[in-house]
Image 1 (cartoon, rainbow, N blue to C red):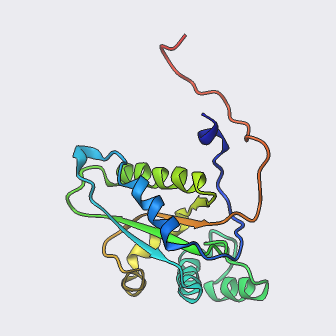
Image 2: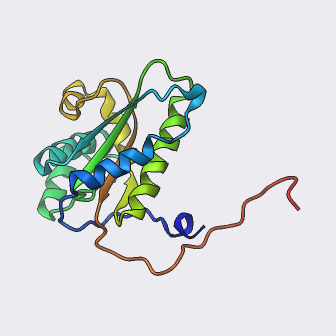
Length: 182
């Protein structure tokens, strides 16, 4: 229970490269995730080049600039460049993107399960993650998908890296509403 209660979404990362061996352990854990009909129709890409991450972030900003309160994509990009901040990927040293193949019968659910396995595995290895919902629209950009190295629609994206913050308490959560459980 402690693992599940201690896992947090982190948006502040150390400037420290993740060794390939550590990333491979995260993906090793993900191999054991459940999927509908056991189809396992996942495709993954890891992006760790800071220049490429910045390019992908700027493309995401072009999609969501209104949502984050800017009148134009150019204004948003200029502002975040001026304060050296990445509002999409939070300057994480690596990103994990996931698409699913056409054979999957429940791609969104399968994606949530496998990436949760990855998040929990990362936590046990001293890494932090954050699900990046704002990255989902990138699947519409064929050029960015070539850069990422995947085809299809993005069903999940995570930032991953060594946390620059340490949380000392479990966040409060409201009790679940469960019928039939006394």
